[in-house]
Length: 143
Length: 143
Length: 143
Length: 143
Image (cartoon, rainbow over all chains, first blue to last red; front, side):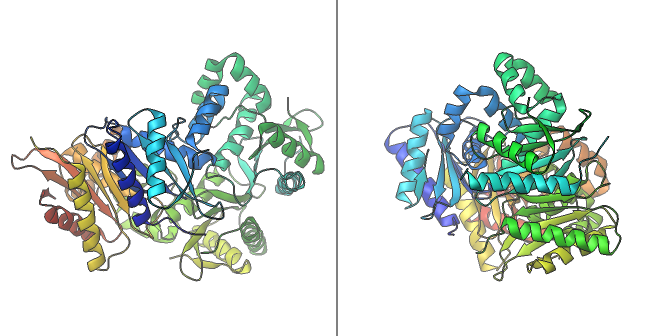
């Protein structure tokens, strides 16, 4: 099983922010967590709101906690709000179930980590995360 | 009143995981709590997502906390979400109100503990918990 | 990098408890966490006190959180109590800085997980954890 | 009043990690917070223990919380442990009172943010933070 390096994580962030600037998105924060759920790298652009780091981390952490992208967690939250609310409590709070949290997998489908992006609409946040992973040559799993 | 032994708990887990493999379910985590809500035994298969332990424990703990199976808690959460949300807060967070948390009773209906299973759909999780209890010769109360 | 399997974790627990019975130690609880800090397997003998699971997990989790055995964390807690107290707060509470939490490493010194044992004196707890790892053919790092 | 930019924060981290590699320090994690206490940038090298991010952030956040470097907080913790313990509780937990958390000031002594470094001894952690600030042309206040 491969590992996510700091260089990988920094490349994802650089490319996600480049995408955000090219598309003129709102100020963006991007977090990359490793497979342990530990923060590997993070950056917040000028003008991001006070708690954007927690949101970026919560999107990525929620994806890792449950093993699915935060877009899927958002669908489940709509279908069964009590389930997602209770899991959020059970894991101690860090889970943001809207698009923008994307799993990173290796060629054998093992989870290497997750990216969480936040600042614009959740669809645009996810597009930035995916652009970052693509540019860094990593396999994204937004499902 | 009988007591749940470690051998009982380990037998439940072994049989629940055997059921999961036989049915090709997704990687599963199973927790057994005693009547005090204390963790008695636990196992997580390879490939389980990061926070499955908290979900398995939360299903079993919620069942013990309220004296009904987590399937019933799920129904109550749909009917009165504020009630389940407030109980979750009141008990400090560990309560996951979806099927898969099953009470264990003795012949006099005393509660001996609870099993919580998670990994696949909640119906399949509950089936694995029930299979484990049945194989271990323990009386399940999923209601 | 190798991975800790459920079979590994269960072998560690079985051998640690066998050691505890052979030495007539007090009732023991043993937790095995993987490299992510996720609970992999757990068992508590009959007669363990109410919150032994949290202590076993806290010994193992503290070791993983800081990358040193819980015996070393105990020494640091004596030398600089405010440091260990603050780290415990910063990581959300699960850290028990006394002997009995032992890192598991692969041949390349990568951390595969940690064992936490509790029930008797902390020296005896650590001896049980080490006996479990030795019997399972895993490399212990109690330092 | 000047502001800390993302480019500033990333320059601090790059130089702090370059210092750590040049001095062969243990794997290091470095966090930069802005004046609001919001995470601006973060990086963790390969091999950092599971919860190093919380420690790095806690050093920097503690410095901002009290308006003095974490080295001074460490001295206060030795002199009046109950005071630092109570402040840690009061601010919700993120405060690590050992050297390695350094305030960043502008030419008028306004606080622009703080750096927190962790991985090696606390003296070496602080040296890495100071090297990072110096290389980035920012004014450090470790006191």
